[in-house]
Image (cartoon, rainbow, N blue to C red; front, side):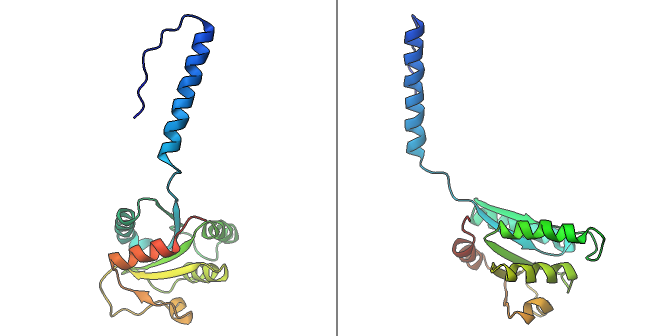
Amino acid sequence: MMEIADLEVVSGEAKASAVKRLEEMAREEIQKAGPPPLRRRAFLIFRVGDSDQVREFCAAAKEIDPHLDFIDFALKVHFKTENAAYVRHCIEKRIEASAIVIVLVGSTFQDCEWVDWEVRASLKMGKTLVALRLDDDRSSRAPKVLRDHRIKLLPWDDEEIRDLIEKNALDQ
């Protein structure tokens, strides 16, 4: 913490010198702090019906890495609406801005055109894609798009999530 001594300002010249001294002290403190921590960006793909579980995932992941930012499009519009091209464009920009794409498969997850498109768009961009179960039900099959691209559906495991985030979600 920086301490500032009482300065008696007698003239404008003394005031300017005091301001310069304070500026230099502030620069020194900023340099001591070092660079800000890297932000990590992850694009999330999930079904709106799994939002509660997704929030739990985000809270747990933030405990693992507080510098992790999540980007998602919780879509409630039909894939074939007239503004779908614009929505796809917006999603592409957010996927591009992410270092990793995480598919969160919960209890309401099923094959869906938006999910299919988001996964394919992510792979087309060369993004690292990870698929995680949001529940412990290992009997449910992975969605078709994940099976088609041989993307393994991983169980929920804090250590594995930590490793994935640290290895793949570096700032771009």
